[in-house]
Length: 112
Length: 115
Image (cartoon, rainbow over all chains, first blue to last red):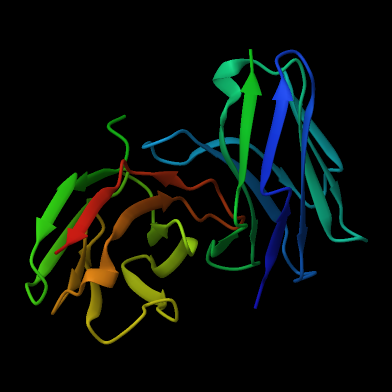
């Protein structure tokens, strides 16, 4: 089955700097890669997703890149703000029935 | 859009008791997922349904756990008997499956404490 790894497990950046979180997956058949943000005590919320026919996708300060050959994908947050502090989860979906496998999460702290 | 609705939000009960968690997916969604989240194990998929049919229950930890989806707008996750190690936050999520995998929308979760 699919296995998703995520690095780093914790990340601390100064406000205004960029943050990068990297993930790898094992199943070459995966074709859908969402990213979720979870604030303390809250539910995971989708912030951006990418499909295997796209190499990069941007939404304001957030961008994701996908390298299908190497089976890795990354989340980039530019101009970080204190409200970006949260746990971020990457995930990969198998090809059928929407079974999404989550990575272990990255705890991001943005220092004012 | 009311989102995914879970109840109760918090549950505290003694070990050995039966616990029932409830979920109402977003209207029109045809896939439903139950997750368990703990510090030690992260976010684990327990079971998921597609068109009310259980597709994969390999994540259900033991026979003490069972899940049902009697119709498109309701699902339950039951633990009987409950044990302290079942203490966790349980999330329900739903999505629409229409040929391509779609984003899952999570409910606010049920924080379960077994004493």
